[in-house]
Length: 137
Image (cartoon, rainbow, N blue to C red):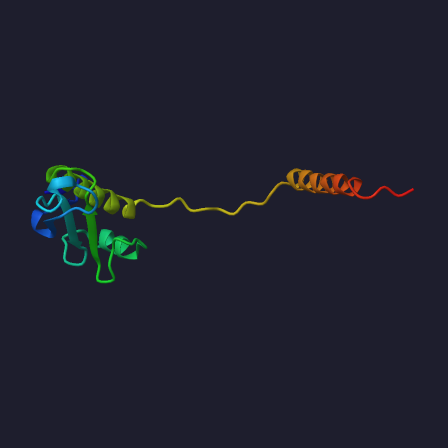
């Protein structure tokens, strides 16, 4: 059972976890131990509220496939348990981040004084550059 918020929880049957061999250097254990975790979560088949599903499917994230399946590969740690916890926490953070409402941006105009200061700086810079030119007698 993975708890997302007070009212939203994911059952164990919704999250498919399989152990795979990790990439990279590992010494003698690299070909024997399956310590990496491959997590798959089908958004459309889950018991998440419709609002969560909608927001997750709209996300532009490389971990979400076109079919609406979240795929997370965790291989940062040496043990399978730590990688499993890492994968579950990353899934939880992804779901939470999809639901957070972004603050609406309001367009603002620059003040007259700031526009005037900008123009003064531009003319001052132009004068400095003209003074660097050839000296005429």
